[in-house]
Image 1 (cartoon, rainbow, N blue to C red):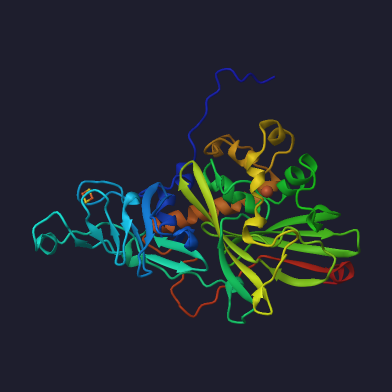
Image 2: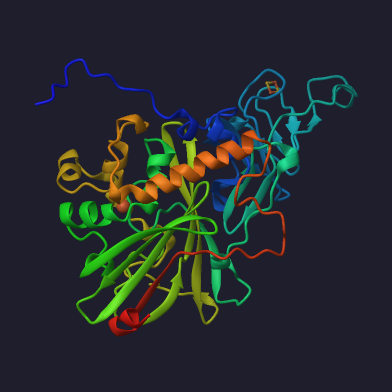
Amino acid sequence: MKSAYGRTVPAPRIELTHVEAGSPMGEVLRRYWQPVCLSEELTDVPKKVRILCEDLVVFRTGDGEVGCLDPHCAHRGSSLEYGRIEKSGIRCCYHGWLYSPEGRVLEMPCEAAGTCERMSVEQPGYPVKEFGGLVFVYMGPPDKQPLLPQFDVLDTSKGNVQLRGARIWGDYAIGYVRDCNWLQHYENVVDPWHVLVLHQAISGDQFESAMMQGRGEISFEPTTLGVRYKMTKALPNGNSLVRCSECVVPNIALIPNIREKGVELIEEDRCSDVTWVVPIDNEHVMALSIVAWPLENGKLKPDWRPGTDTISDIRPGHETARSYRERQLRPDDLEAQESQRPIAIHALERLAGSDVGVVRLRRLLAEQVKKVELGEDPMNVFRDPNQRIKTNAWNSVVKQLELSDS
Ligand code: FES
Ligand SMILES: [Fe+2]
């Protein structure tokens, strides 16, 4: 036996895992719009969020404008999370300085007339955009601000879907926030082998889908946007499932319907959601998605996925309250990923053939770090407003014969 006595634990690979401002990956992630919360979460009180190791306060004014500011009031530091939302901005609870969504101080009620104009105080903050039911912020250098990506799967021009923001992950997972580094959560997207072990052999069939049936082959491919896996499964019913799941660098996951049954023939049924894997800080991650919910006769299609009527049904809330014993007997992604350590130690890993997707993803991320260090745009920074981005994740169900012919 190799004794564990005296073993040492190397440091995590900071270059890819740490996300604070000034860290290599923190600077990469700050070159993209990142979602911070759902639009519907902005109510009559401000919302404090933490993202990329920074605390921020997000709010919607009475006029409907959204702002995202440093929480600590420029006067003497009280947090704007306790501020009062008014028609034109947010008012600090302590001495009443009123901030516009852009951070300009509009009123200083305790000061002599003219003081506000003379001092011309500005609170630091970030630009905000709302899209698809999510609130996005851009936390990078102002002169590098890109456009929000226009993914093909979120195209509403045909009028057959409605975009809705959601705190979901795929279709089956536990907890909206994970207590671990963002990268070990993200890598899961290009780790199809774990589906067959964790979600099937160990914990029972957790997806009840074609993915879990028959014999299969798995490969990994570079895509225009990142990397994907391709799983081909010969199903007992004579059909084959061809499934591709994609990581869109640096932190977007495209996971097609994991509950596809493989009964009806389908051609490239693309993802119905785009999910951002958003680091809260170095040891916590959350997922925010835009779901393209199908419409039927102009209304949201009910029971669109098996057993789901609303977005909150997609992620069964009760799954978060499992006992330790139950989690040991039937672990899920949460148990597998959080227990890799708060930040997985790459130097201790013994990577093998099934990890090719993970290795390619890490390599791509390291390349983006280099690009940003050289002053270049990293990949998937879009600046053409007419560019519709073609994604590469889908399920197809074909006759087994067609597959062997092609
Ligand atoms: S601390 Fe905010 S107004 Fe004084
Ligand atoms: Fe999983």
